[in-house]
Image 1 (tube, rainbow, N blue to C red):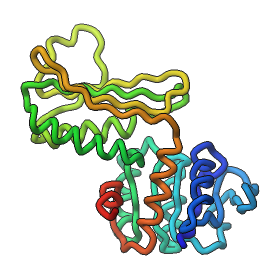
Image 2: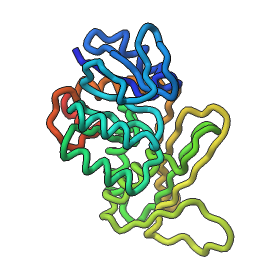
Image 3: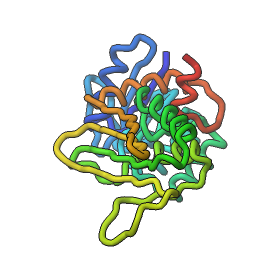
Length: 252
C-alpha cells in the first residue's frame, strides 16, 4: 500500500487525484495540505506540512510553485518521495529540486499524461528524421485561467525537438512586427489561452509542399491525475534521485 499526501487537495486537480486514489486498492490518501484546515471525504487537511503526523510514502503536489520550499523540506525531513506536478518553476526552483534529489526521490515532469510522453518521443524521432528541410513550430492551447506561458509541456516538446535536431535550435516565443524571414535554427513556440481548454499541443513540421503534424489533446484533467497516482506507486521506496514519466513507462 502506498500512503500519499495530496498537496492542494481542495483544488480541482487535488480532488481528481483523491478520487482516483480512492478507487485504487494499492493507494490510500492519508491526508492533505492546503491553504486552510479542513476535512475532505474524511481525510484530514492541514494548512502546514509541519502539522502532518500521518506516515507518508509520497507527496503529490498540484498546488503552486510557491509551495516548493515547504514540500522539499517535508520530503527531506521525512524521507518520503515527492511528485512535483505544479508549473511555473524558476531557475532557482529547479536548482533546489536538483539539490533535493540528492537526498530523496524527486519525480518531476512537465506532463503526467502517458500520451504526451509518447508524443515527446515521436517529436524527437521526427526532428531527427526530417532534419533542416522542415521548420518546427509548436502551438499550445490552455484554459483562460492558466497563469504561465508557454506551458511546461510545450517547452518539454521543444527540448525534445531540439535534441532530435542535434541541439542547434533556438526558441522563439511568438512573433510580432517586422521579424524578417524565418531562420532554420528557430523553433517557434506559441501560446493560446481561452475558455475551458484542458490542454492541447501541436508540433508542426513544415517542409516544402508538405506538412507533418504531431498532436495531443487532453479531454479531461483526470489523465494527469491518473498519471500522478501511477507515478506515486512507482516512486514508493525508490532511492534518492530524479525521476520522470519515462522511468514509469519503462517499468511497465
